[in-house]
Length: 459
Image (cartoon, rainbow, N blue to C red):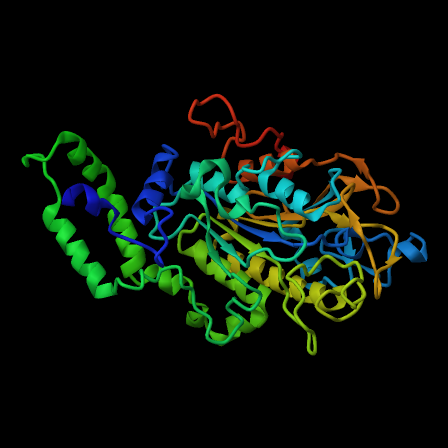
């Protein structure tokens, strides 16, 4: 009884959903390629709420006043490629990324569109797993770290109906991410921030955990013991996973990776001392420590005198008392320059550390904004627009200095090469070295990871 029961010695923060060794076992059993050193990683940045394509990646300077907005386009390092003037840092780095200007679907509803982006499906089911869960299943990590981490929880009206992105969907809790950022000020930019995920249960101190571990080692069944074969086999199977779980809870690696205080102040300053900048720095630290995929919600924080409403930074209707071109938390004047500087710093940092070739960086929202500027409840804004919007990809073999697809004269509709949620997800999987046709179901022939076609031209 002790030998069988002690296999789940570790508990995390008193939660009984699944033991850490079992979660790690699922990581390993999911793919015969577990731990491959060539496996790539991903930082997926969600511009939650929907960035205006006209004011960022797809400016239309010849459009009428009520469409083009106040920002002029500026040249990038790539001849013929322009971006909005609020993105000077990324303009200088254009040779490192590709912009897709032809993202498209037909659903202008935040909750559903977010599910579509996360699942890579135009018809997501309530239990469709997110990209992070799919990658966790097909490309787990052997590092003493979780395979998938989610930084900054969705919140507000744009949140998915049932957050499959936090549960693993039909793949199960085994493939759920570790969440950091339960509320808007739960992030590394807040003084005193710490991650509680590696705390043991309230009644299990670290010395007591060590005592349990030592007891388990003494009870470890061997081939010569009278232990039933099924228990002996399970013990041999679980042993390396238990060691990894114990190391994650008891060792310093995971805790240190989540502690941005280990970074020099100058590095923290480069990323920006706001929630998004510090979460991106944390994402880089996690990728460097062996996490396979980090999802980062682009919550840009509050401008001076702002009051918190939601983390939907990019949902710029003009309904929060802040116009889309203003300098408050829900305005481009505040959010876009900070996003520009932080993402540019991430790309530079990854490249300096030799990580960009093995790390896919994704910058995308669930849709774009209407070409026509309209009057919101209390200020001007742009409304939801899924028919045509933009996304950025960098690293992991993506060909830099390129633009894929194009829009019409007002960035309202796709002119050529439309990219569906399915094709987008297939492209991301391909970049990570995963065949989109890989089956997720136990039967081995249904439920492919993606039904889309990778955009091979991007590589």
